[in-house]
Image 1 (spheres, one colour):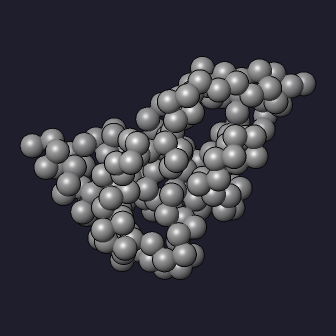
Image 2 (cartoon, one colour; image 1 turned 90 degrees about the vertical axis):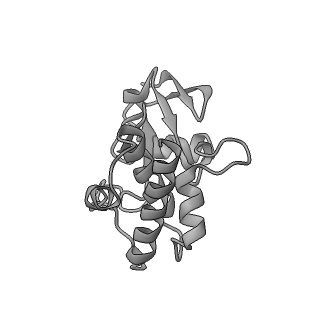
Length: 159
């Protein structure tokens, strides 16, 4: 039975009337046309679909839309502030930390979630926490450089 679900997406209050068991990923991509969040495996194993739910990174393919009622979601489309990239986006861009780009949004959202939770985390700790994020192109060395740049920039912002 379809149910109205009210939640905030990228700072905008949204209501969708749908089956509450549908995945957040499906609603974001199909109903709200926010296609930056990618479908990878559909089992939470690759994390290409990572978004922030109340500031915590989650696999949107495993998150039921009914569980986000009255919650706040940020997707890759909402991470930047206007024309100013989020520091993690800027760091990844500066380091060319992507190849095909399919997993990049999930990686960026994962790093952003970790830094939001702990602004003083080390790059090594972030890399350890991102073990579930898979890159089919094998661009891990580039991602590692982007992560270290993001941590360095974040440290300057909090100094």
